[in-house]
Length: 141
Image 1 (cartoon, helix red, strand yellow):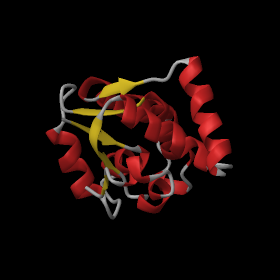
Image 2 (image 1 turned 45 degrees about the horizontal axis):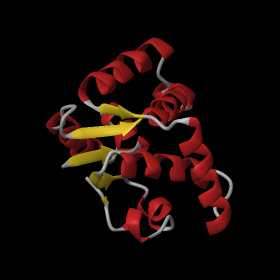
Image 3 (image 1 turned 60 degrees about the horizontal axis):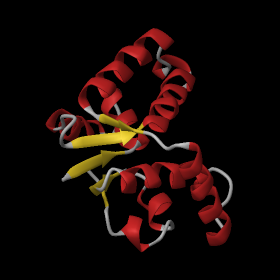
């Protein structure tokens, strides 16, 4: 059974001083491609977050890419095809999802596509609003 790690878990894994670093890092280290996955979209989100942080917390693009290489090596990357992307947006419209929540819907769809038993996130409320099929799988590390 696959564990799905979202962007919030991966960012906390990256930053040693993050309040959720230890449980996120431990969860990350327990994974291998056969047991853990993330959305390919999460790679872009992690890159954006860690290279866009203010002040001393900002990572260089090179540092971010090294970490993303570790993610790629440890977790299966789940992608959506064009039809699946459009289906996610159709579902967003029908459920009243808008704005940045559309990105959460993309990530959740990747987790469902991977048949992830558990979706690990620190943003529980973001995913709970995406319906019972997603909400029933949400856990914090």
